[in-house]
Length: 178
Picture 1: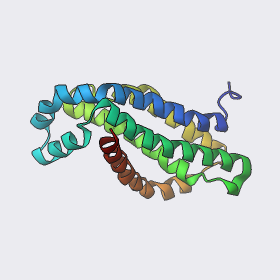
Picture 2: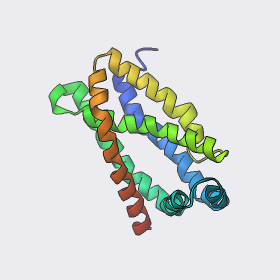
Picture 3: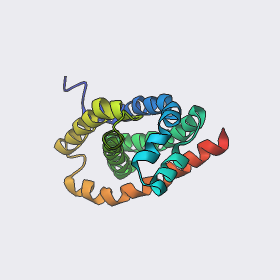
Picture 4: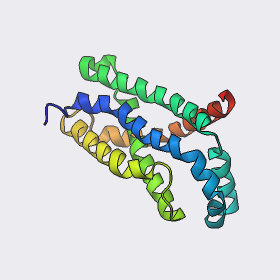
């Protein structure tokens, strides 16, 4: 089994895991928002509810375009991580680490949303059965094989915040393009 789940295989699985998760979101988000907007206003403070509704009120096609924009970053980071594995300094493991950390942490936001809203939210199912297990195996493999260290993880954590403007830009592009 180890030959099938070596570090490079796990790195290349990242875009697939991303797509599995985001397909769930793409399929569910528009309909879920239509059905649950009053629930959001009932449970969350008005200002936060307004922001959530504004940010995620988009058609399935618009959301798919936003996912495509983010997928480009995921793909580039994956290729750079693979180059790092093959040629060392000619690649970059830091960007991959940042994006996979965001992916892992993002899973807990879906679970938290489901708990707060007492409803299965878009992305919660794959967060629980795909993202969290994959991320744990990925990070364990990266650490055990000394591709990254805990120091790199802690160094990358603050940079995870830089993904927020990328996600907001992706949503904006999705709304403008479609």
